[in-house]
Length: 314
Image 1 (cartoon, helix red, strand yellow):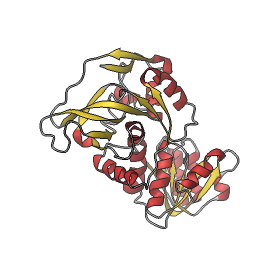
Image 2 (tube, rainbow, N blue to C red):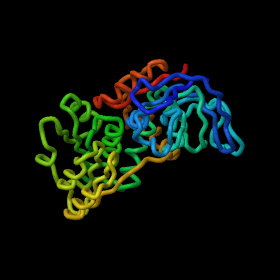
Image 3 (cartoon, helix red, strand yellow):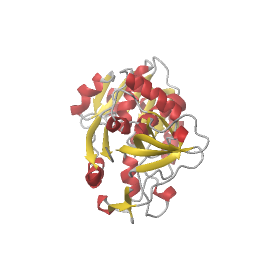
């Protein structure tokens, strides 16, 4: 089967197409023919030697954690899925899943039936970003109606799902994004939007119950100043540094880090919301399989609206 691998860390130019044997599903696993695969910041970071590279070890390896496709075969003990089912998932994260290939195997419960109202390209844009937003809001901070939530980088992959999930439970949502994305963010549920290029968010907002920081650096430290006493900042890219922990303690708030994990049950609920028209999926562009280097270059631009997807097969 065709796959995209790399023999060293570096820029998009290290990615190369190879031919490898098709995997076979072990007990409790499914074999999925991958139709489309999503691109995430963690893919580009890992390719370059950051991200999950410390866990995966030295190349070669096959990246790709967002998968949408069709079940080809099931291993012993699988009863929730069957051949022919259209599924989507974030298999094996943060371990190697090999989504940038024509076939992938993973535990059956890392997948769910894909939303029936969208195609595989759109479904492939969902799992990692949507699960990140879902697990932050529902599992880490237990968002409630009436709470105030500030989402940094609201126009990105995780951000645009976080806006919609927070709004769905009745929270008041503020997002930071460039001016060109403000109208779109209001359309999908943001109550207020701040242009981070012209305005310091701490000058125009406050009394937040939750801040979701999807930027990193000192952004999370600055965010402690806009939280209510007892509020929470979730530091996604950078984690909780000593400086952030000290700033949070000084202001009487909590700082937590976060890493997403596979969750087929949550994906089933997210699919229900998509099919009900309550959540929109933004796909900026779909790249062909043989143009994955360009997809990585675009991902690294930092200007992606929503998600990028690679078409693996038809």
